[in-house]
Amino acid sequence: MKTEIDRLRRERRAVILAHNYCRAEVQDVADFTGDSLELARRATEVDADVIVFCGVYFMAETAAILNPGKTVLIPDPTAGCPMADMVTAEQLRELKARHPGAAAVCYVNSTAEVKAECDICVTSGNAERVMATFPADREIIFVPDQHLGSHIMGLLGRKYILWPGYCPTHAALSAKSIADARAAHPGAPVLVHPECARDVREAADERLSTGGMCRYARESAAKEILVGTEVGILHRLRSENPGKTFHPVNERLVCPNMKKTTLENLAESLREMKHRVVVPADIAARARRAVEAMLAIA
View 1 (cartoon, rainbow, N blue to C red):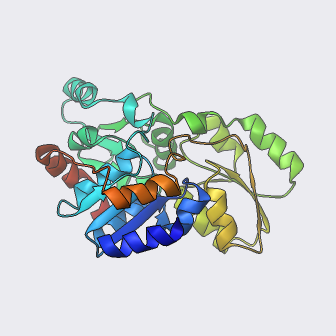
View 2 (tube, one colour):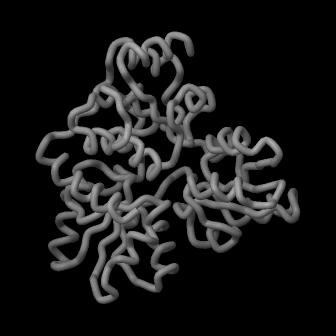
């Protein structure tokens, strides 16, 4: 299967991007693996005719938005994001109408239609930097993740209008899980994703994007680290840091959508050039402004 994927990649002049939460074998055949910010950057830099995005649909949409001249494929188009589906463009327009003059900011984990209604996007890796650029007196709408929004509010001492969205996978992590993990591995620092609830964030040592977790793991003197996010990242952490030990805070933190990409449907996607991700031109143009505004800052 890997041999076929390599052959098809060359024939199609394709590049394969995989999120840190994907299956280990998918990460291993990817040209680039990263978090949402890293992959958004890569999507604008690759010299290829075809981008195959291994992750969830909004990520492939973002790649298509940033690369109107390239073919963007997703191996399984049913790989959605429950958080992204928690707010619609119509709901955001209604909220903006109730707060005229407010800046609309969306987490990159949102649909193209929602991005098109926003002034700028953020990722978990750059949200603090991007949000710090807004004047202190500017009213801000933040969608769809209430927990990332709350995290940035705390860091910057601001108050936002938060949409009540959340990640179901990270919602399964509890402060008790962290306490139990600390008891089992005393002295090991705990890393959690800012999509986690406040009590979980407060119980951890660091609140980091998956890219931030990878950097922390490389730079930290700790030989044992507890990781509170989707378990797919453990493969990359262990591969890049063979001298260190990584434990999941909760081994049941599995995103079923992130696991929908397999070697089989990745090969089929390249073989049959499916499933193409197409964003309507008017939506893509408006969404591109929001994403590019983020990239210009980050």
